[in-house]
Length: 445
Ligand code: NDP
Ligand code: 2IT
Image (cartoon, rainbow, N blue to C red):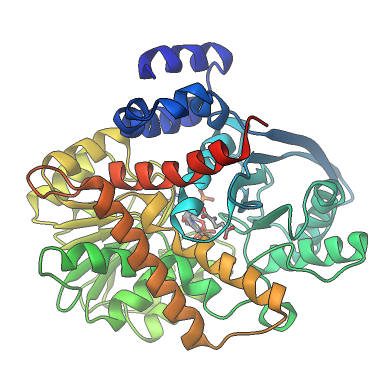
């Protein structure tokens, strides 16, 4: 394989798909050496096959607003690769959604899901619909319209969507209701379901918990732990909330959360009822964190700024892509931060990653560090198949073990001559090998 030549061909085929091309290049660069050492991959055209999705469904969703006006949104489902299990991945509802972004997320999901140790292929979907400021009735009508098209393409053994940005418990409920009606079946076709209709305990907390478990393993390689550490978290959604809960439980002090309007610095720590308040803030539909500073005296609001300017030991970016840039990374390094673990998908820019890696901080890339969410989706699928429900402790123990296993796989393939672990390389190689070998076993299809 020649990475530059392959990338040139892809750029010509898919001009302007920036995020997708960036994600492919990162994986290709990590696996180049091992790929070229195994000529059976080249002979079977594994790379040429893995970089293109199996298929993409594009559709429109017309829906009527409360004012009687007709709206039209664009929607997609990218079924990327199902060599090791049915397509699995979230749905994102956000005005910024486009095909390049979803292809990037679907491609990442192949390797993330492979790392989880569970039999799940990669996929992603979504729409440029913005749930912000919409009434429950409007969100319901949109979700119903979305599922009227999507249901033909998904199924509990075929493709199992879940939540992502803008798709939480409310949206999954509306989507599931419509699927159940159309397909005439009650199956585990979506994950992140409500507790009373097939959902798993711990799924809401899972991405944040998993991120902290992964960071805990990274810290342990240096004889460190969360105990007594100061932590900066960005975002205030589902992932940030779970990370704040677990980091606090492990003895750390979480000092920041953030929103599109700025960030909150709370010198007394964001714990207990302040973490519960995050749920209220997210549910308020306003998408701002400033109200925290009215609610709690110790919370200072920093308008238009990001949390990474604060002196912290650990940084957990849990909001959105490209929210931690080169200057932010330099500031973290200068202030003595030892660990950056990605709860969000692609929160660090490539320039930020370069700074973090050059300074040999512990760096957990999203496809490993945030895999706890989809792993617990996999555990929800297992419970649905068995028609059983596990306890909190059972799910949490399994999630914890999966995150340890992912960490071990990264160390196996990412340890360099000086003992430093390149978790990006480790995650990409471990994730790739499992899928590539499955593709070899199953022939050219
Ligand atoms: P949320 O629904 O809470 O959405 C994230 C929010 O972050 C968006 O509403 C966005 O607001 C807001 N935001 C935008 N810019 C900033 C900023 N500068 N600082 C802070 N917040 C900002 O999402 P989740 O908690 O579900 O997901 C967060 C991240 O984790 C995403 O990258 C997601 O892909 C990833 N992830 C989620 C998993 C899950 O199970 N939910 C699993 C694995 C990864 P706006 O709309 O104004 O842009
Ligand atoms: O990015 C992700 O891994 C998710 N949004 C979760 C996907 C899932 O199927 O649970």
